[in-house]
Length: 84
Image (cartoon, rainbow, N blue to C red; front, side, top):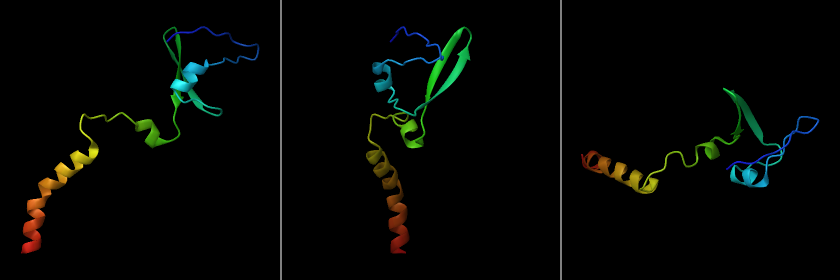
């Protein structure tokens, strides 16, 4: 996505609504500004660590199923422990 915008006399830049919606930017959101070569890069800073990690550990299988499989590996050991 590419768009043009102007810098105001005060140095303000308006971020288009489509981009604000896509990155969930609202009033008070913070952006990290980086210079990479001849580019200015704006990176949204998330304040909620859970929201920041959302979607980074995607898997084809649900986490519930993965947890049940992992717990199932311990079942024989726990069963022996209980019966002894």
